[in-house]
Amino acid sequence: IAPSYISKIASAGLTLPFTVNRLELGTSIVGNDIVALKRIGDPDYLLGYLLVVNSYQSVLNEANQNLILSSIPLTLLVLTFMIVVAIWVNRKLFHPLKRLANFTESITSSRSFNRRFNYSGGDEVANLAEHVNGMLDRIENQSIRNQHYTSTLETRKVELEHMANYDSLTN
Image (cartoon, rainbow, N blue to C red; front, side, top):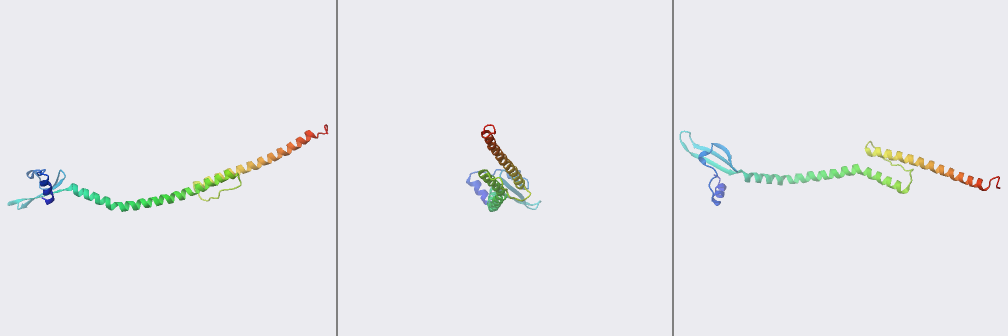
């Protein structure tokens, strides 16, 4: 029996948690212990038995602790790599959207509908930029038409005022 196991049992004032006579030859698990029993001597002339008892719980706890401690650096490295990749992807994907948002905000504040957003690519941002530029085309054309109609209406207004005030009948 392992000396540490004996000292553990003796210091606690306990007895073995199993009966040696009832154990089978070979290795077995009894409670939290691994028990190995082997005959010493020939089958015809038995000298005794070799009994080895060791607690496997402490070994498993130590192995778990070693595994956790050895995996921390790799986990931190992978986590750092994933954060860097996430930041890069975030910037790569959202930078064009931020540019488009700033562009539309500047259009709104300046009301200069003749400007266009330059972006090339085959992604959704390029599709959105194309639609924004198309919308700006329609707004610009409508604005030009409105200015033309307003100019025409102002000219007609002046003509009508002139006709109302200087009619051939009223001189």
